[in-house]
Each structure stands twice: as structure tokens, then as C-alpha cells.
Image 1 (tube, rainbow, N blue to C red):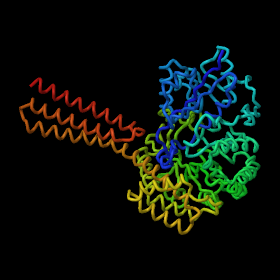
Image 2 (image 1 turned 90 degrees about the vertical axis):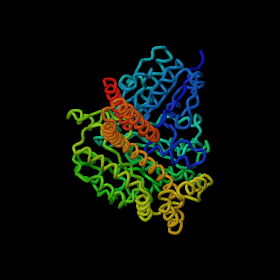
Image 3 (image 1 turned 30 degrees about the vertical axis):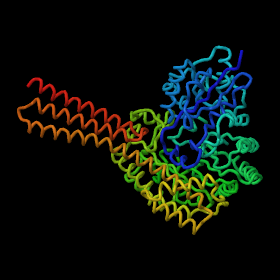
Image 4 (image 1 turned 45 degrees about the vertical axis):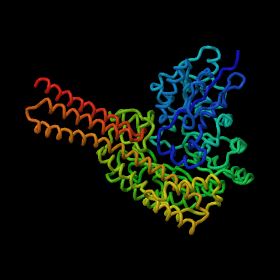
Length: 600
């Protein structure tokens, strides 16, 4: 019997805040911002003597072909909630070719009921559930779903006291299964879990409150693997909270020596909790900069202390947020911030206060989203008990104009403030104002070197695309100032300007799609007024009036459909409903006037 063939497929992301799709296109040869590290890690867990793993098909990079489906036995996916639509399409295509789909990742783990079309679900952490599935598959006894609970007792990896796998036996991702040159950055994982228990976050549900880490030697081997494949450039440590375990103090000096021995090939960035800014963690910040970390994403969430307490985010109340951000920046780390609109206990005017804070703090990349109740979180359970839930989370809480629950505050006011906040944040003048604040706040960083050929190409494309476009003058002023005041920082500001193009485009397209909804109402009201004028004009000649009104109605529908076709496909959901509603009402008017003509 030959080896079983697995085809790993990574579903596509829609246009989102972190997709950075437009920014990536400035870089020659790049197709996506980040590789599917989780799927590559799972691929490394498949025994090579029993399974043949095909090249990963990342739908963010390339299409899935019929031939690839024909030549495999099983399709294996790893999916986040935001990738649901693409994942469903993968399943449908696989089934058209008679292939079964094995679904893993956060989406099928949290929402098995939305993955009923998958043939098998391997939920939870793969170290716990994958081996059981593979064993049963080989024996012809594979079940529909494997969870951490159902696989308990069958795992062969070391577990901690809470029954979670230690990461000491987690393999190095199969980098040979993708082309790293197609990605804007690489990604590896150091730890899983978070010691904090914010009520809206599902990390502790998925991975526990005791952060588990890899050893420094493991991380060195992972760095070696990426380095040996020829990758150089940005590298994200994709942890839930990089500083959640004190072991990080032993890791950082090790990484510094590894980087130094190879000429510092990687520019590192990660996610961490706000306590990184505490005075007691100054040594961690210093060690991160020495290891060549240059930025960190932190969950600031809100400036409202009462809301922070209610969401269980006490670590954000121990020090004023502005002070914590400044401490991190002065250490030489750029702060990227996460913020939330719609929290219980939130005072009116939150959007404006957040805008003022973000501008003052110089948080250039600010991910502001609507509060989303994730399944299994304390927030979700509380809202369900209070009867305030509307629908399950669909994966994107930024640039998405709908709450999945009934907020305490006036919803219309919240959404209006949110839209205005996004518009202001990614307006060129405001963006570069806080870029200047960041540049002045940022402590010394190791030299980032000159622009390489890739960077020069991106810079040339930036100048070609934006110099004479809206906001071009603001960009040129900022670039010129930086060349004079802080030339070593210039490669970073080029990247900042490129990212603005993505964020600004995303915001503009979202607002255009949102404006389409009232536009259809205006079209309908204008049609009704015009229809009345036509009836008055034709008087008793009902047949001619009906003909003219029907023609006018069809012109309105054509006009609405043309404008709809110009909207970005990833923001059409609300617009599509509005267009269908307009069609129904207009067709109803056509039928009504047609009936009148017949009776006349």
C-alpha cells in the first residue's frame, strides 16, 4: 500500500486590516503578507513513511487547480474564522472531485457546527488530536470529529499540569512546502497561551492561562531553518503574548547572539500585553531591542478605566496608558495598538477620545474594531444570558459596520463615531502627524541599514503611485523631514507610507460601500417622485404613463447595479442586501403600474 497523499490548502483572506494586501504589492514578487506557519507545522507532524505531503497551496498566493485536487487523496486545511467563505469553497471543490477534507485550526475548533460539510474535523491543538485521527484513518475507523477531550489518553506528547501539550516536541514548520520569497514577512511561534483572562478574548479558552514556551535551542533551530532557506527580512514571533512567560528573559539573550553571529538577518516584531511598559519590565524591552525587535502590538482597548475593569483587563489599569506607551517607544520599540468600540460601561464620546489619545501617543498603526463576542468567552456567555447576542462572530471586527450583539450605548451613535474615527485616523495629514510624534518619541534603534533592491523598488513604486495623488504632498514632506532629521530611520518611514496606502484604501472602500445603502433609498424616493410627475403628465393615458414609469424604473435599477459593481467585493454584504431590496421594490412598482395599465 502506497503512502496517503495529503494536499495542504490554506484558504484565502478577504481584504482586512492585517491582510496588508495593497502594501504587499509594492514589493516585487510578493503575493501575501505572511505564510501559513500553523499549517506548515501540522504538515511536519505527518509521518513521512505513511503520508506524502504535497506542496502547500496558499490561496492568498495562487489558485487551487483541478489537477492538484485530482492528484491527492485528502485535502487538509487550517482555517481562521475570517477565512470561512474561502474554506467553504475549498470543501465544495474538493467534493466535486470526490476528495475528502480534513479541517483544522481555530475556525472548526470554535465552530464545528459551521463546518458540517468537512469530512473530518481535527480540533484543538494538533499535538493532542492529530495522532489519534491519523491512527484511525490508517485503520479505516476515522471519526467525524476529534477534540482534545475525545483524544485524551491517546496522545504521545508531554503534557503540563493542565493537560496542554508542552511545546518541546513541536516540530519545525515544513518551509520546503512553500516559496518564502512570495511573502512580505515570515512567522514562527515561541509560546501559546496568556496569563491574563480578558472577558472578550478566546486565547485562554483555546490555549490556557499558563503560557507554554519552546526552549531557546528550539528557537535557534527554527531561526536556522528559515535562514537556511535563504529568507532575510521581517519575522514575526506570532505569540498570543510574547512576554506572558518569564522564560522570555532567557530567550532574548540567546536570540541576540544568534542574530549577531549571522549579521542580524531578521527584523523581529510580535504581540505583548501592556505590562511590557511597566518599569519592572525595562530589562525585557532593552533585551528585545538588542535582539532586533523593532515593533510590538499591544491591546490598549480603551481609555475608559471602568470599561477596562469590566472586561477583566486589570493589567491595563496599573499605569496610565500614555505613560506605558511612551516607555515602550523610548526603549526603541514602535507600538502598534488594538482598540475596541462598544464595550459595556463605555462613556459617550469614546471615538473622539480614542482619536485624541492615538494622535498624542503617536500610535501609527491603530487597529480599531467593534467589540466582538467570541464563542466560549466570558463576554459571549454573559451576553447570551442577557439575551443580547445577535449572531456568531464572522472573523473581522475592523472595518465591519455591524455589532453581533445589542450594545449598551445607542448603536447608531457608536457606528457613526466609529466610521468617523477610521476616516480621521487614515487621513494622510493625520497619519503623518502621528508619524512625526512616533519619530520623536522613538528611542535609539540599531541601524536598519540602507534600502535594498527590493526596498528601492517599493520606494520607486510609492513615489510613482502617490506623489501626485491625494495626500502625496503630506507624504513627501514627511519623507523629506526624516531624511534630514533621522536618516537611519528612512527605510521604516517608507514602509509606513506604503502601509498607509493599504489602510486608506481599506477605509475608503468600506465607507463607499456603507454610503451605497442610503444611496439606494435616495434612488427609490427620487423614482417615486418622478413616477408621480409622470402620472400627472399623462393624466388619463394610463398605458403611456405605465410605459414611461417602467422604463424609468429599469434605468434606476441599472444605475444602482452599475454603482454596486464598482464596490470592493469584500465590503458588499450590506450593499448587496440594499440592492436586492431596491430591486424588489422597483419590480413591485413596475408590476403595479403594469396592472393599472391593463385594467385601464
